[in-house]
Figure 1: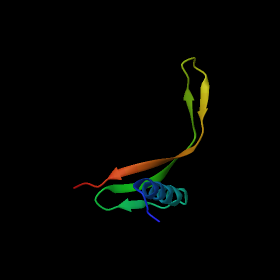
Figure 2: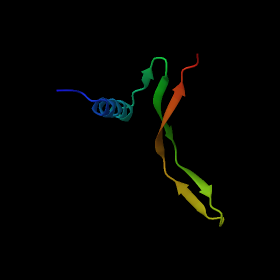
Figure 3: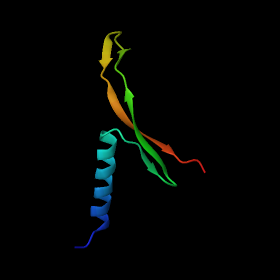
Figure 4: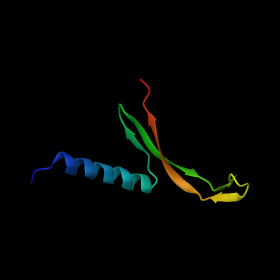
Length: 67
């Protein structure tokens, strides 16, 4: 069985995604670090001065390695 670049990249992305979902941090030497940051809910004002609730969410962050 030959592993194509497409299958390899899909497997790598799936492995990183699964690790981030489980709360792990991913360090890629020479590139940087992937991690997940939780953003709590908040209330913002809309243009018509009404209140809008922004739900909590998790965001993926990337910090590049400084050389």
